[in-house]
Length: 103
Image (cartoon, rainbow, N blue to C red; front, side):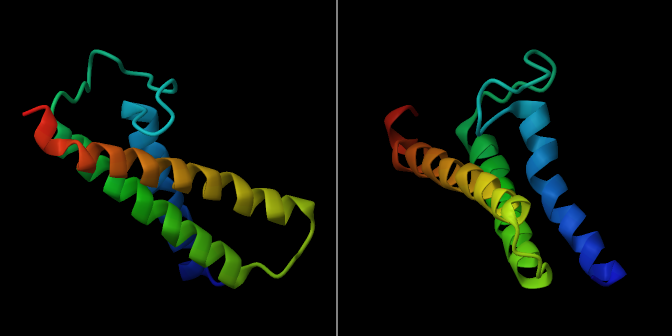
């Protein structure tokens, strides 16, 4: 892998990991800052989820495109972010679909 490809792979991982660690919007139980960075509006949460979804999509594209080793760790490295991506899309859909109900 080239240096720029490694850089963008790490950027895409950070696009998911940093918001998840700060707000815990996808998993719900990993937030390290319950009172410091609390988001009470849905628009902010939708933006954070959109950034996480883009980050996970970019990670999967870069990872599948650039890694050729097809062992069990390769498949685990694809499967785990794919599960996070599906859950993030589901949470985004639920928040977006119920946006007008809670205003």
